Image (cartoon, rainbow, N blue to C red; front, side, top):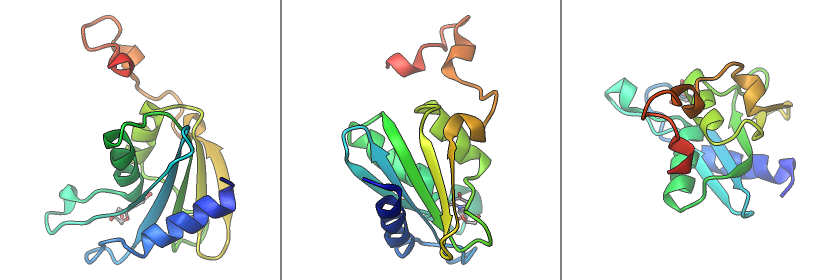
Length: 140
Ligand code: THU
């Protein structure tokens, strides 16, 4: 699965976005270590904070299907430069691996690839809770 194909799958997911409030459809395609791809799109809501981003939609689909390790995610929006994941999505990606390659793209063909760890330096992780019973989330 190369970057070009993953971006194409994210573009396809973007077509299915539900974004009647922002009118800013986003698509994502998450590549699991198994080789399976999970697509996602933003799903908005009249109660704005209830909306979910494309990246987290893809992660939720994957985890609910039993996959927790990922090698890459493509994100596509109609942005001027490559579409950057929001802060909450950076945190969610960091949960599942600092090595995930985040492939940011737009409709004009601009692409930027950055490791999840570099998108959220100093991320708060389960390891930060190791002094309490809250640690060890990754083993569950
Ligand atoms: N959005 C995403 O789905 N992913 C991003 O990386 C950036 C923002 C969505 C959230 C909201 O539905 C719309 O784009 C405008 O913020």
